[in-house]
Length: 504
Image (cartoon, rainbow, N blue to C red; front, side, top):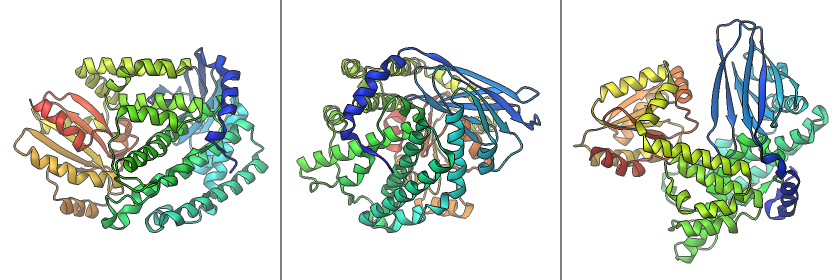
């Protein structure tokens, strides 16, 4: 795959920033409209998810007219990706000012055929039809260039052999891209998008290895045998320019990989070596201060646009944890580093929304429940609250396939044991498991509390209603039935102090 090392792309990005900066300073409307062909009115609404850079994903819903037509309009400073969802997700890439018309076959249930039948018209017509052609080929031929089952490779290969496995995946992607280019004749933007998309799948495989491999042998848990050079692959990206933002959904994952793994692992390894906790090049526990983080962001991010995005992503991550302290104490630094108007506006909007939520948690809770509406998820949440009225409620959403979920269950049990004499209800919602496996896991961990095993409809409704994109995921509810906090960050060690504060 044709990729460029970040450290070599600084000049390219500087030129790109100079040439397209003027496009970032004004919001313009984007219209996504279209028609559901063969519409039978059984499903009244169509959903649109907008993936903004370094911001919460935005979900919108509109009614479909009797003849199958729909219409969305929103504003953006920069290009971005979004997804229409009727029976299946249909990706739509748009530039500010675009008016895009899309036709979707309402009867088609097959994912691959849906890509073949979906057609785009208007602005960015070729770009979106090119991406549709990519997905049609990708899902049609996926197994032909995935040489080994990922989970099996992640469980059984040592680091050296897993890196060779990733090399073989990249070679397969190269062959697939050449085939795609020869057949579809895509635009340059579409080709750049597909390269970025496929590289992100490789990065996801890397992180999957870090999570899955230790679980092959329980004795490996807690050991740090992965050299920090393993994460260097993450620095291979196409040059960041204006068109990179068309990959806004994938860019979100990439920024998290770059920040959480490449930067953090290098930073931890460096500090561990200084503190004598590990040999050079291997990761071990080490204390990381905010000042060390700030220095590391600059040291490990030579690309100037990526550097701004990393800071914006760090702010977003803290805001998701309901933490404004890091941003407030470093606001002068943020003002100095963040130059792009759209990033400044994004951070300001996210900060002001969080301050409003912190100032009035009841208002935030009512907003969440209003958004959920009259759904199965609302009925399930009401049932949990009614059963535990007057108590602090800690809800843990997990699944049997989720390594991080299972790793937190012993911590949750310890917290439950510590607070056994307090008015705290521990509620566990399993989103996916065979009933026998579910019971076996509860027995293995000797986990008390209240347990729910959701069926497929309950799971999908719960995840959609509360916008849960990853697990484990937690809710903390006070004695008045107010959802005080929710998110993946609210693990038992984080929740302990917050629960005690609510009890007091």
